[in-house]
Length: 213
Image (cartoon, rainbow, N blue to C red):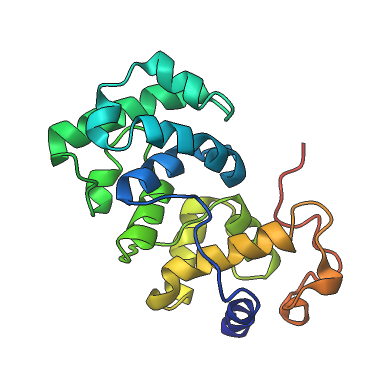
């Protein structure tokens, strides 16, 4: 596993969170908006949103209908509009307009689960308390043989035991980069994969680690 991790580090030396943000607040909101949406789609919607509502105080007093118009291109925009306005209100009421730097406080905010909290803690605060497990991380860890678990919660616990703590934040970015660029859900490019020699399903990965409908 550590050899594969080293190979991914060499392949993607610039791996990072691809959600555009300028501070903890914009990262938190962007991550909430990214649920069941692509980072590309979120990045297209957030410039207008943050130009109009740049901080928790502004967003807390926003008209939800206006927020809906600004993020109407992303999935579930109506529900997400309500969530981020309520989130901003709670940041003002409970945290003085600041994004808390603890998992316990973050997961009490609307639309914020453990995955979103891990993103904010790892990317902005540089203090991850876990590993972000999204659809790419779940798919790739199963394909690479890092886990046989099939839920994000169990996969995260296993990765926290196997991956050095110093790499908890980076490992998810590496796997997400690889999942978007090479080890895609359909037709993974095993022929040009830099870590295929260490992959137990190389050449036959498509039916491993992805949902079938």
